[in-house]
Image 1 (cartoon, rainbow, N blue to C red):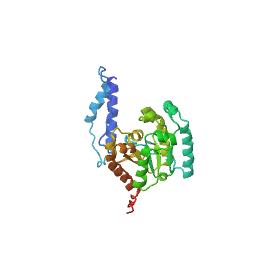
Image 2 (cartoon, rainbow, N blue to C red):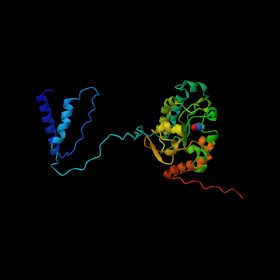
Image 3 (cartoon, helix red, strand yellow):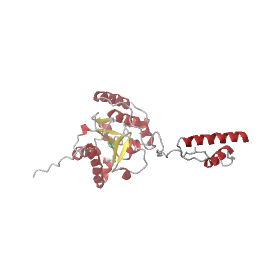
Image 4 (cartoon, rainbow, N blue to C red):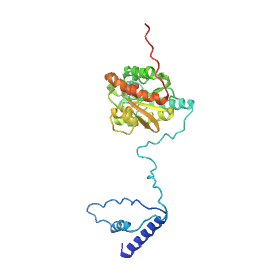
Length: 286
Ligand code: URA
Protein backbone atom coordinates (compact mmCIF):
# COMPACT_ATOMS: atom_id res chain seq x y z
CA UNK A 1 0.00 0.00 0.00
CA UNK A 2 1.53 3.35 -0.97
CA UNK A 3 1.33 6.58 1.04
CA UNK A 4 -1.72 8.01 -0.74
CA UNK A 5 -3.70 4.75 -0.39
CA UNK A 6 -2.82 4.74 3.28
CA UNK A 7 -4.02 8.34 3.69
CA UNK A 8 -7.26 7.50 1.92
CA UNK A 9 -7.83 4.47 4.18
CA UNK A 10 -7.17 6.56 7.28
CA UNK A 11 -9.58 9.24 6.03
CA UNK A 12 -12.38 6.81 5.42
CA UNK A 13 -11.89 5.13 8.82
CA UNK A 14 -11.93 8.59 10.47
CA UNK A 15 -15.15 9.55 8.60
CA UNK A 16 -16.80 6.29 9.57
CA UNK A 17 -15.91 6.75 13.24
CA UNK A 18 -17.14 10.35 13.24
CA UNK A 19 -20.41 9.33 11.69
CA UNK A 20 -20.85 6.59 14.30
CA UNK A 21 -20.12 9.15 17.04
CA UNK A 22 -22.81 11.45 15.63
CA UNK A 23 -25.20 8.53 15.76
CA UNK A 24 -24.49 8.15 19.48
CA UNK A 25 -22.07 5.24 19.36
CA UNK A 26 -19.46 5.87 22.02
CA UNK A 27 -17.50 2.65 21.79
CA UNK A 28 -16.74 0.02 19.22
CA UNK A 29 -15.22 -3.40 19.34
CA UNK A 30 -12.17 -3.68 17.17
CA UNK A 31 -12.30 -6.80 15.04
CA UNK A 32 -9.91 -9.38 16.24
CA UNK A 33 -6.89 -9.38 14.03
CA UNK A 34 -5.18 -12.70 14.10
CA UNK A 35 -1.54 -12.35 15.06
CA UNK A 36 0.67 -12.95 12.07
CA UNK A 37 2.70 -16.10 12.02
CA UNK A 38 5.87 -15.61 14.06
CA UNK A 39 8.27 -15.19 11.19
CA UNK A 40 6.01 -13.05 8.97
CA UNK A 41 6.23 -9.24 9.10
CA UNK A 42 2.97 -7.74 10.45
CA UNK A 43 0.85 -5.92 7.93
CA UNK A 44 1.50 -2.18 8.12
CA UNK A 45 -2.13 -1.39 7.31
CA UNK A 46 -3.44 -3.42 10.24
CA UNK A 47 -1.01 -1.90 12.70
CA UNK A 48 -1.61 1.66 11.53
CA UNK A 49 -5.41 1.41 11.68
CA UNK A 50 -5.26 0.21 15.27
CA UNK A 51 -2.88 3.00 16.16
CA UNK A 52 -5.15 5.60 14.61
CA UNK A 53 -8.34 4.56 16.37
CA UNK A 54 -7.66 6.04 19.84
CA UNK A 55 -6.62 9.31 18.25
CA UNK A 56 -10.12 9.89 16.86
CA UNK A 57 -12.32 11.62 19.42
CA UNK A 58 -15.45 9.56 19.80
CA UNK A 59 -17.72 11.47 22.09
CA UNK A 60 -21.43 11.01 22.22
CA UNK A 61 -23.28 13.97 20.83
CA UNK A 62 -26.47 12.90 22.57
CA UNK A 63 -27.07 11.31 25.97
CA UNK A 64 -25.31 7.94 26.16
CA UNK A 65 -27.52 5.00 25.44
CA UNK A 66 -27.53 1.90 27.62
CA UNK A 67 -25.13 -0.64 26.24
CA UNK A 68 -26.94 -3.77 25.26
CA UNK A 69 -25.29 -7.08 26.11
CA UNK A 70 -23.52 -8.60 23.14
CA UNK A 71 -26.06 -10.20 20.88
CA UNK A 72 -25.38 -13.78 20.03
CA UNK A 73 -27.86 -15.89 18.19
CA UNK A 74 -27.64 -18.64 20.81
CA UNK A 75 -25.55 -19.27 23.86
CA UNK A 76 -22.94 -21.93 23.33
CA UNK A 77 -24.36 -23.78 26.29
CA UNK A 78 -27.97 -23.67 25.24
CA UNK A 79 -29.20 -26.72 23.37
CA UNK A 80 -31.52 -26.09 20.45
CA UNK A 81 -35.07 -26.95 21.34
CA UNK A 82 -37.04 -29.67 19.59
CA UNK A 83 -38.51 -28.10 16.45
CA UNK A 84 -40.60 -31.03 15.22
CA UNK A 85 -44.37 -30.63 15.66
CA UNK A 86 -46.00 -32.29 18.66
CA UNK A 87 -47.77 -35.42 17.43
CA UNK A 88 -51.25 -36.59 18.36
CA UNK A 89 -51.36 -39.73 20.56
CA UNK A 90 -52.28 -41.89 17.53
CA UNK A 91 -49.48 -40.44 15.45
CA UNK A 92 -47.03 -41.08 18.30
CA UNK A 93 -48.05 -44.75 18.39
CA UNK A 94 -47.57 -45.01 14.63
CA UNK A 95 -44.25 -43.12 14.65
CA UNK A 96 -42.90 -45.27 17.48
CA UNK A 97 -43.94 -48.45 15.68
CA UNK A 98 -42.13 -47.33 12.52
CA UNK A 99 -39.04 -46.42 14.52
CA UNK A 100 -39.13 -49.72 16.44
CA UNK A 101 -39.26 -51.58 13.12
CA UNK A 102 -36.17 -49.68 11.94
CA UNK A 103 -34.38 -50.44 15.19
CA UNK A 104 -35.22 -54.15 14.98
CA UNK A 105 -33.19 -54.54 11.78
CA UNK A 106 -30.37 -52.16 12.69
CA UNK A 107 -26.86 -53.48 12.07
CA UNK A 108 -24.92 -50.27 12.65
CA UNK A 109 -22.99 -52.08 15.39
CA UNK A 110 -22.18 -55.42 13.73
CA UNK A 111 -20.91 -57.01 16.95
CA UNK A 112 -24.10 -56.16 18.88
CA UNK A 113 -26.35 -57.11 15.98
CA UNK A 114 -24.59 -60.48 15.86
CA UNK A 115 -24.79 -61.26 19.58
CA UNK A 116 -28.24 -59.90 20.55
CA UNK A 117 -31.34 -62.07 20.76
CA UNK A 118 -33.50 -59.11 19.80
CA UNK A 119 -33.50 -55.34 20.04
CA UNK A 120 -35.05 -53.70 23.12
CA UNK A 121 -36.83 -50.59 21.99
CA UNK A 122 -38.72 -49.00 24.89
CA UNK A 123 -41.87 -49.42 26.92
CA UNK A 124 -44.60 -47.26 28.36
CA UNK A 125 -46.97 -44.51 27.42
CA UNK A 126 -46.44 -42.61 24.16
CA UNK A 127 -47.89 -39.59 25.97
CA UNK A 128 -45.77 -40.00 29.11
CA UNK A 129 -44.93 -36.85 31.05
CA UNK A 130 -41.76 -38.49 32.32
CA UNK A 131 -39.23 -40.56 30.43
CA UNK A 132 -36.45 -42.59 32.06
CA UNK A 133 -33.30 -43.30 30.09
CA UNK A 134 -31.03 -46.17 31.10
CA UNK A 135 -27.89 -47.60 29.59
CA UNK A 136 -28.42 -50.79 27.62
CA UNK A 137 -30.36 -54.05 27.83
CA UNK A 138 -28.93 -56.77 30.03
CA UNK A 139 -29.46 -60.51 29.72
CA UNK A 140 -33.10 -60.43 30.97
CA UNK A 141 -34.03 -57.53 28.72
CA UNK A 142 -32.36 -59.18 25.73
CA UNK A 143 -34.40 -62.32 26.40
CA UNK A 144 -37.74 -60.57 27.01
CA UNK A 145 -37.42 -57.59 24.64
CA UNK A 146 -38.38 -55.05 27.32
CA UNK A 147 -36.17 -52.56 29.18
CA UNK A 148 -35.55 -52.85 32.90
CA UNK A 149 -37.12 -56.20 33.65
CA UNK A 150 -34.23 -57.77 35.58
CA UNK A 151 -33.02 -57.00 39.11
CA UNK A 152 -32.24 -53.37 38.44
CA UNK A 153 -35.56 -53.18 36.60
CA UNK A 154 -37.37 -54.30 39.74
CA UNK A 155 -35.67 -51.53 41.68
CA UNK A 156 -36.57 -48.96 39.01
CA UNK A 157 -40.17 -50.19 39.08
CA UNK A 158 -40.23 -49.72 42.87
CA UNK A 159 -38.83 -46.21 42.48
CA UNK A 160 -41.58 -45.39 39.99
CA UNK A 161 -44.47 -47.05 41.80
CA UNK A 162 -43.67 -47.00 45.52
CA UNK A 163 -41.56 -43.86 45.39
CA UNK A 164 -43.38 -41.65 42.91
CA UNK A 165 -46.85 -43.17 42.99
CA UNK A 166 -46.85 -43.72 39.22
CA UNK A 167 -47.18 -46.94 37.26
CA UNK A 168 -44.67 -48.28 34.74
CA UNK A 169 -47.35 -47.88 32.07
CA UNK A 170 -47.69 -44.15 32.82
CA UNK A 171 -44.04 -43.31 32.19
CA UNK A 172 -41.78 -44.24 29.28
CA UNK A 173 -38.61 -46.25 29.76
CA UNK A 174 -35.86 -46.50 27.15
CA UNK A 175 -32.15 -47.13 26.94
CA UNK A 176 -29.30 -45.45 25.12
CA UNK A 177 -28.41 -48.72 23.38
CA UNK A 178 -31.15 -50.88 21.93
CA UNK A 179 -28.97 -54.00 21.77
CA UNK A 180 -27.29 -55.83 24.62
CA UNK A 181 -23.52 -55.43 24.74
CA UNK A 182 -21.88 -58.86 25.14
CA UNK A 183 -21.16 -59.81 28.77
CA UNK A 184 -22.94 -56.61 29.88
CA UNK A 185 -19.83 -54.56 29.14
CA UNK A 186 -20.38 -50.79 29.13
CA UNK A 187 -21.42 -49.30 25.78
CA UNK A 188 -18.59 -48.05 23.62
CA UNK A 189 -18.55 -44.43 22.41
CA UNK A 190 -19.08 -45.52 18.84
CA UNK A 191 -22.05 -47.68 19.81
CA UNK A 192 -23.64 -44.76 21.66
CA UNK A 193 -23.13 -42.57 18.59
CA UNK A 194 -24.71 -45.21 16.33
CA UNK A 195 -27.75 -45.70 18.54
CA UNK A 196 -28.31 -42.15 19.74
CA UNK A 197 -30.48 -41.05 16.79
CA UNK A 198 -33.06 -43.68 17.81
CA UNK A 199 -33.25 -42.35 21.36
CA UNK A 200 -33.37 -38.77 20.13
CA UNK A 201 -36.27 -39.69 17.87
CA UNK A 202 -38.09 -41.46 20.72
CA UNK A 203 -37.81 -38.26 22.74
CA UNK A 204 -39.00 -36.14 19.80
CA UNK A 205 -42.03 -38.38 19.29
CA UNK A 206 -43.04 -38.74 22.95
CA UNK A 207 -42.01 -35.19 23.87
CA UNK A 208 -41.96 -35.88 27.62
CA UNK A 209 -42.22 -32.91 29.96
CA UNK A 210 -39.38 -34.32 32.05
CA UNK A 211 -36.41 -36.63 31.57
CA UNK A 212 -34.66 -38.71 34.20
CA UNK A 213 -31.22 -39.93 33.14
CA UNK A 214 -30.14 -43.09 34.93
CA UNK A 215 -26.37 -43.23 35.16
CA UNK A 216 -23.38 -42.10 33.21
CA UNK A 217 -24.16 -43.57 29.79
CA UNK A 218 -27.44 -41.70 29.55
CA UNK A 219 -25.69 -38.52 30.66
CA UNK A 220 -22.88 -39.00 28.14
CA UNK A 221 -25.40 -39.56 25.38
CA UNK A 222 -27.73 -36.64 26.07
CA UNK A 223 -25.90 -33.94 28.03
CA UNK A 224 -22.79 -32.15 26.94
CA UNK A 225 -20.80 -32.43 30.10
CA UNK A 226 -17.71 -34.12 31.42
CA UNK A 227 -18.66 -33.67 35.07
CA UNK A 228 -18.92 -36.78 37.24
CA UNK A 229 -22.32 -38.11 38.37
CA UNK A 230 -22.01 -36.73 41.89
CA UNK A 231 -21.70 -33.20 40.44
CA UNK A 232 -24.66 -33.67 38.11
CA UNK A 233 -27.28 -35.28 40.30
CA UNK A 234 -29.48 -33.24 42.61
CA UNK A 235 -30.03 -30.38 40.18
CA UNK A 236 -31.81 -29.50 36.98
CA UNK A 237 -30.35 -29.79 33.51
CA UNK A 238 -31.91 -29.40 30.10
CA UNK A 239 -31.92 -31.63 27.10
CA UNK A 240 -33.21 -29.71 24.06
CA UNK A 241 -35.36 -27.59 26.33
CA UNK A 242 -36.71 -30.52 28.39
CA UNK A 243 -36.07 -30.20 32.15
CA UNK A 244 -33.85 -33.13 33.05
CA UNK A 245 -32.75 -34.77 36.29
CA UNK A 246 -29.71 -37.02 36.57
CA UNK A 247 -29.62 -39.81 39.12
CA UNK A 248 -27.78 -43.01 39.96
CA UNK A 249 -28.41 -46.05 37.79
CA UNK A 250 -30.49 -48.69 39.64
CA UNK A 251 -27.72 -51.28 39.20
CA UNK A 252 -25.34 -48.89 41.03
CA UNK A 253 -27.96 -48.54 43.77
CA UNK A 254 -28.04 -52.32 44.11
CA UNK A 255 -24.28 -52.34 44.64
CA UNK A 256 -24.28 -49.18 46.77
CA UNK A 257 -27.54 -49.06 48.76
CA UNK A 258 -26.32 -46.01 50.72
CA UNK A 259 -26.80 -43.96 47.52
CA UNK A 260 -30.55 -44.67 47.57
CA UNK A 261 -31.08 -41.63 49.77
CA UNK A 262 -29.64 -39.40 47.04
CA UNK A 263 -31.67 -41.14 44.35
CA UNK A 264 -34.79 -40.45 46.43
CA UNK A 265 -33.83 -36.78 46.65
CA UNK A 266 -33.47 -36.71 42.87
CA UNK A 267 -36.90 -38.31 42.41
CA UNK A 268 -38.36 -35.74 44.77
CA UNK A 269 -37.01 -32.95 42.55
CA UNK A 270 -38.99 -34.48 39.70
CA UNK A 271 -42.07 -35.07 41.81
CA UNK A 272 -42.13 -31.51 43.03
CA UNK A 273 -41.90 -30.17 39.49
CA UNK A 274 -44.52 -32.64 38.27
CA UNK A 275 -46.89 -31.87 41.14
CA UNK A 276 -46.76 -35.44 42.46
CA UNK A 277 -47.11 -36.51 46.06
CA UNK A 278 -45.40 -39.61 47.40
CA UNK A 279 -47.97 -42.35 47.96
CA UNK A 280 -48.96 -43.03 51.56
CA UNK A 281 -46.96 -45.92 52.92
CA UNK A 282 -49.27 -48.81 53.73
CA UNK A 283 -48.87 -49.80 57.35
CA UNK A 284 -48.39 -53.54 57.63
CA UNK A 285 -51.47 -55.17 59.16
CA UNK A 286 -50.86 -55.90 62.84
N1 URA B 1 -29.87 -51.61 32.72
C1 URA B 1 -30.20 -50.68 31.82
O1 URA B 1 -29.56 -49.65 31.72
N2 URA B 1 -31.22 -50.91 31.06
C2 URA B 1 -31.96 -52.00 31.14
O2 URA B 1 -32.91 -52.13 30.39
C3 URA B 1 -31.61 -52.95 32.11
C4 URA B 1 -30.55 -52.75 32.89
